[in-house]
Length: 471
Image (tube, rainbow, N blue to C red):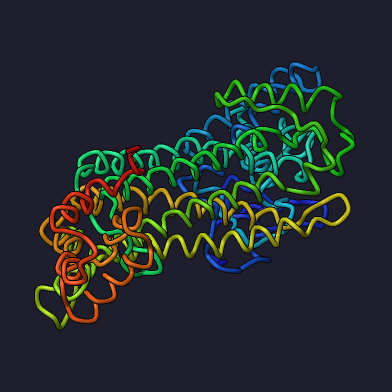
C-alpha cells in the first residue's frame, strides 16, 4: 500500500490493521486480502455470490428481530445496507479471492464488515467504529461462517441452476426438437462402431439427442431438493450454539420469501456443515449434462466432416474463416468450443467430488473451491449451450443428396432381406456386392436368391426406419 494512500486503522482480535479509508471492508477482510495473494478468481460469476451474501444477512437480521434477538433500529440499518449489497451497489467492496480459508470465513466476514460499516455510515457514524452496528455481534448474530457459507452455496446454486442454466439448455433442446420435426422424413444410413448400419431418419437421430438432453435436464432438476435444505442455524459445529432455537427455521423461511424458492432449514445441521453431498450431486448432474453435450456435438462434427472427403451429411454455418493457410475452409468451431467447455466441466466435477469427500469430523473445509467450480461449470455450460444453439444449430442444414447417396451405397440395407431369405444368404449378397463393387440389387439377382420384383418390394429404406410390420 502506497504511503500516499489514505487509510484508517481498525482492530480485530489479532490487533490493529490499516484499511483503505474509502473501503467498507474491515480488518479481517484486509488480513485475508494480504494473506492470500493466490490467483485472480473471485466469486463474480454474474455476482450471484455477493447477492446471496446480502440476502442471507438481510434475512438473518429480520429473523433475529422477529425473535427479539436484535433491536429494530439495528435490524433496519442492517437490512438497508444488505439491500444495497443485493442490488449490486457495493460490489467493489468484496475483493477476496476463492483461495482462502476452507470454511469461507473470510468471505463471511467480508460481508459482515461491509454491511456493518455501511449501516453505521447510514446512521451517521464513521467507518471502522463498529457502532451502532458491530460486524460480529449484530450482522453475524446467531451465525457462524460454518453455517452461513454453505447456506450461501445453496442459495447461489439453486438460483443459477434454475434461472441461468435450465432455460438455456431447454432452449437448445427445443431447437433440436424443431430440427428433428423438420427432418422427420429424411432417410439416412445409421452407423454403429463407426461403420455402416441399417437406416433411420435424420429426425430419429436428432430426436435421440433431444431425449438425451431431457434426461440430463431431469437429472439436474433432481438435485434441487437437496440444495433447498440450508445449513443456517447450525452455527459452528451443528449444535446451534449462540443462536435462538428457531433462528434457522425463521431465517430459512425469510430466504424462501426473499428468493421465491422453497428453502428450509436442513433437518440435520451436523451433516449440512460437515458434508456437502447436495453440491457434489449437483456437480455430478452437470457432468452428465456435459457428457450428453459432448455426444451431440461430436455427432454434429462427424456428420459435417468433409465436406467432400468426409461424411458431409450436415452443413455447419460458416461463422468465420477456418484456416489461416487454407482458403475457404470452414471448421465446426462451435462444436469445438462446446466440447472444450464440457471437458472443463468434467475436470471441475472431479475436484468437487474429491473436495466433497474431505469433511473431517464437524466441518468440510473445501467449501470455496466447491462453490467456485460448480458455479464455473454452470456459467460455462449456459454460455456454451447458448452459443451452440444460436451459432450452430440454428443454421444447421442437410445435404439431402449426400444423405441419399450414402443410403444407396450402403450394404447394410441387405438386412431387410434377412426375414425373407435368412441371415446367411443375405450376408452372401452383401459380401459379393462388396467384393466385386456391385450394387446389392445386382448381387442379389446374380446369385439368384431373389427376383427383381421381390428385391424392390422387400428392400425399402424408408420401411426400415420402424419395426417390422405384421404380415
